Amino acid sequence: MGISINSATQSHHHTHKVFLLCNYILLGAASSCIFLTLSLRLVPSVAGFFLILLHAFTIVGAVSGCAAASSGTNRCYAAHMVATVLTAIFQGSVSVLIFSRTGDFLGGLKSYVREEDGVVILRLAGGLCVLIFCLEWVALTLAFFLRYYAYVEGDGGSNSMKRSGKVQEEEMNGWSLPFQV
Image 1 (tube, one colour):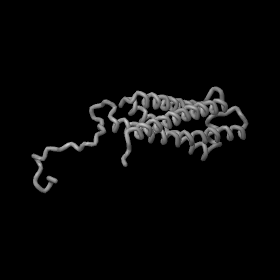
Image 2 (cartoon, helix red, strand yellow):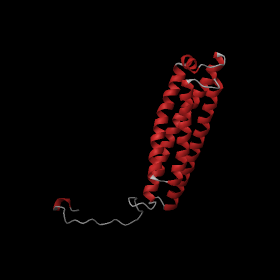
Image 3 (tube, rainbow, N blue to C red):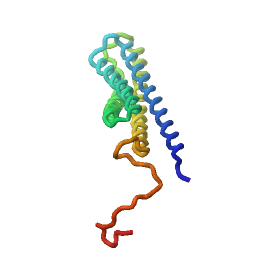
Image 4 (cartoon, one colour):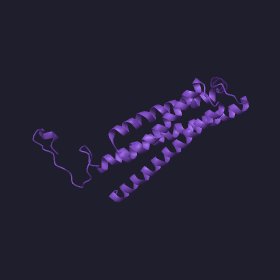
């Protein structure tokens, strides 16, 4: 009637695989955005440099997410969460900026390509930024579930919950009569 340990472990395994797949897609999308930015201008302007730096941070966040999922330490997990939230916020902001002010953004990049081609390339990069934004929030949710599964299954830590069918009795010495059930 309840969830068996095998099904919980299997669910944890599937969540872990989806989390890794999400991070691999993030790696591919962020590296594609870097190449699209470089295709606008080989030596990027200041705005282009910061755009490439944002995608590099996204790649580092995805790699640290894969490492945090396999190691399971608190420090890696916290660093991954902070990096992912920050890059997700900036990716969303960049995508809004690209789609709302494409011409101005293209001018800030000081592109060498024709304006029509630059707009197409920039909108492709904006679409990938939207994809990255969504995938980073999915990765955050999956990382939370993975951490929760590790907590519930008891990965050897002192403050992890142990699975057991027994209810432990509390000492009722300090409780008054209405609270003793």
